[in-house]
Structure formats: structure tokens, C-alpha cells
Length: 174
Image 1 (spheres, one colour):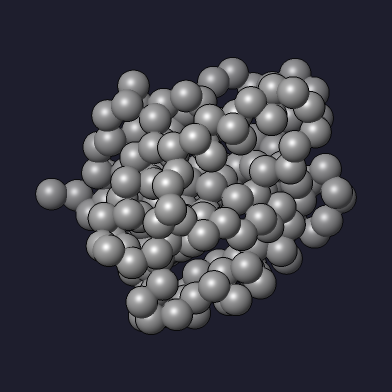
Image 2 (image 1 turned 180 degrees about the vertical axis):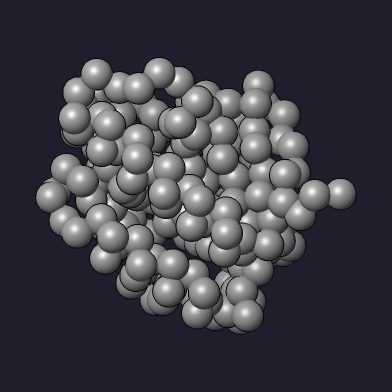
């Protein structure tokens, strides 16, 4: 049975850096697999990806999986594997933009997580604390991301909320 950890926070909250350290701690002296969901479409996204790449050292193996996240988990999973998925919110954006079935993709992801045998650390952006978005696609994203984050938190053994670089464990509660 997998050890599932979910890290959620706002933009530039420090959630990815915290999740990377959590994954490396779980990996010990072994390798960790970084499953990246981002696709680079512009200079801003290229800069964001570069920041993440600069933090990673030789202990990381990269798998790029912008859409078929369940297959990437299944392919990289092993009892001693440590997987970091960064980020579920970018992944759900990819699913929406490509007009794929969000419910089916989420169900497939949850099934892969529940079937995993190693350690999985998931990262997502908290997008439900602000105002209701003005346009329909943004509202669809916010709602789909919220449902996905609820599913990830439900599956997870541990959930951390990161604010200003400080992680607070919110599941299980002490």
C-alpha cells in the first residue's frame, strides 16, 4: 500500500520546495522520480519550469506527463519508489484545455494512487480562497481543481498546507 502525501498552497507559497524536500527525505539515499505536468507554452512558464529545475540535483529522475498522469504513476511505481507529482492543478488545466473528460481523468488518477505501492507526494495550488472568476473557463478550472484537491486530500495519509514558506500539517490532525 502506498504512502500518499498531499501538499497544497497558493502561488509562490513554497509548496513545491517543501514537497521536494519531503520526497527526498522519504527517498533517503535513493532516487526520487519527479513527474512534471507542465507544458511550456510561453516565456513565463519556461521561467517557472527553470526555477524548479535549478533546485533539483542528481537524486532526481524526470518524467514528463502533462496528460496521462495515471500511466506515469503506474510506470514509475515500485514498493521502494518515491514519486513527486508537480502539479495536479497544472495537470487539470491540461485536461480542461484539451477538452478531455475531467471526471474520467480524475477517476483514473485516484485509481492509480490507490493502487500505488511506493511513496507518492502530490502538489497542487489552492485556488478556491479568492473571488469567483469572471469567465466560464476559469470557473470550470476552479471547480475542477477544487474537486481534484478534495479527492487527493481524501486519499492522502498526510496533507500539508503551505503559506509563506511554512508548512502546516492539516491531516492527520495532531
